[in-house]
Length: 539
Ligand code: ADP
Image (cartoon, rainbow, N blue to C red; front, side):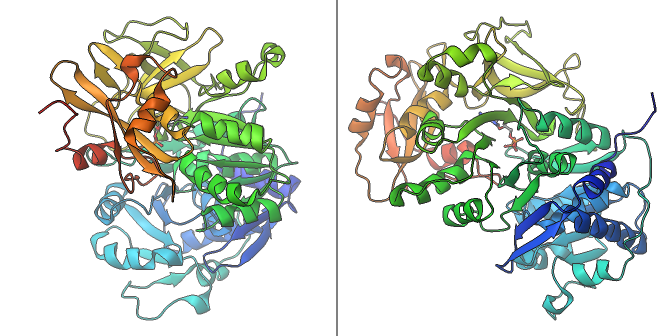
């Protein structure tokens, strides 16, 4: 067989050749809707490559982005990686100190940013000594004067001066293509460095019918940001399949997302539960319905049963619950039914859909006990989840620490069960699990019951020190606007839904739960906020 390296440039070259007129629609920072095609994106990605040559960037040099989901970001995805440089997508929601730190750690040489992030860049640029070129993703006439950022370029002027004629270089498929830092809830952020091979294989796997099932007939809306694990790989799978792409830009509120789904006839959308909560919150009061949406992949944190139920049963949208992480590119498992499940009742099918799903080809997984001994796949035994495969990190980029691998397996930090059919269920992150009287209580299970209550908008379960039981769970709750609910009523709601000893000892109502850079609840900060809290009856 021919030895053709798996390179990211081949994805965009393929889309250009076979799906050149398929549409890419973006809501821009400017507020308008912009339309382009794979053919134009491919041409402009080649201009990006030439423009990087023009700046004297070497092979493997890092090019950073602080940008929303949009066509210019897509052009950078292919232009930067395709020409052999490394695309470093920075999460703009990180603390400015962390952003300055990671640009230095990554040794970024160019940083491209959306206009939204101009104040952020103005605040940090002096602390990013490796960055030599700053590019604002805007037209030449939109470039503000006197920004204080030395040599600031406009993207359009910069690539506009470059030729669109460029031959994508051919090199080893194991070359680094892109990188993403984890949110770093503990210590400094750590980077996963993806390769052309890992990204291309992941793009194949993600598009499969039992994964995201993306085809040329779809209109795909990645609400999950391109600055967070490459929008779950969707930009690459999109080019591989030639689907229509719809980008939300900065507008991720329920109303804007709903309007985009309807106006662009989106068939498939991907996002984290907190974003979908806003979408459903917008739709429910007015009785709005979807006219085109068929499937949604929900992941990044546990999808509450109430949400799966709303999408499946109220809106007729198939939910694919998915589990993954930055270190694994990110797809690990997705939840779709098997042939034998089609005969089951709706309730029995729902019980399966609530799990995080089956491994896609390329991801091997096992669960182990505290001594590293493998546990049975019986859907009951819960242990530390280990994974391995060609798109899972072997080590962190430039890490001083020893490789995280244990006998070749990557420890995910998640606690899970796996059933006899191979369906994974995450019961907790190992640091969030509540240890009560020698037994483990899943914080996710406690939260899922709370958010099923109609008055609850968001719930976080954390463990509180207890003199007898070591720890006991409490649930911290944000009520829906205008809703009435007492602690006693919510505790009553738990009766009969879980074992008595797993019912939280108390309910604490708050105005907001702190969310991290990727929209996940930050339990560490919550524990910090509640450090003076004492359980009823303890001192
Ligand atoms: P960070 O670790 O910085 O928050 P990641 O996005 O890589 O960034 O987070 C991965 C973690 O998110 C997983 O290890 C797991 O704990 C959690 N997670 C992801 N998807 C799910 C899911 N469907 N259900 C429960 N937890 C999930």
